[in-house]
Image (cartoon, rainbow, N blue to C red; front, side, top):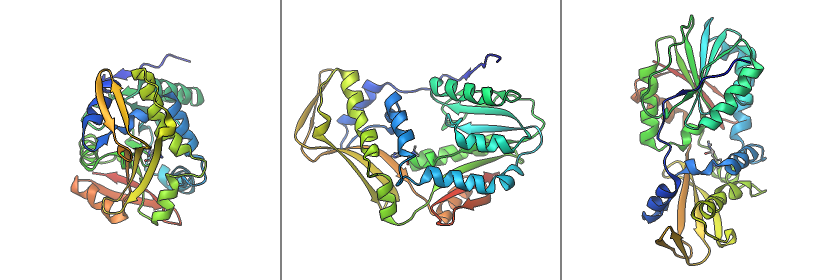
Length: 317
Ligand code: AVI
């Protein structure tokens, strides 16, 4: 297999210690969800997607499988599949297995190691595909590589990862899409829809407590990086649907007063105090449509499951 060269735009990945100290000095305290994904966190996230309560992954996969014939019609002969997020997973393969007119695959991610893994995997499975990985922060404007394509570009942003963006980042991301896309191009975005509060809350409070483990893995990471000995049983996973904001919120709650000594920065966590660790925004079809339109994009097609749990939006200029 020929060696795959990663186009490295050297994105700003942030420093764990510095950002943790800054976030815990804020009121209310917060930790950026990007820090979930160390090796154990990424493994736990995979396990979450297999729990019976976490419906987004399997629902999105079923929508893709059920509609793959129609989705393929949007790829012209000699086109490229771009992927926001490392991917290379089963969902990417559903597209590559069916849409034989795709000649290039461009995975984009902020993490080089995630890219290495996904691009080697895909290159091994599809030897005739031109795999051009890009290490980039795709929430900011960037230049796409010259691929000498005959066809168009369809980008995918799956897994409802867009839901983890704050509203201003979602808008910036959509604006970046507008700037990148030509008239024949499109972006397929996986969007988790607003639904019964119980269904939503169960998905983030699974009965095997894997989501709790995923959230509290941040305590392990803090222990490791700051050489502390915090007892995880002093912390509780909290996840609930904030109806007003239309988002699932995840927090870590202190079970007693705890003083964190972060390289000499002493931070008091009072009993019952919470550290905000993640938002996962849910949208209505109309809400996401008007968000796209506000950012000068058109919704070309929407595919949904029978329960209206999840939607795939194909947007373009
Ligand atoms: C990655 N992302 C779309 C997941 C979500 O549903 O917001 C992360 C997650 N957090 C807890 N469970 C899953």
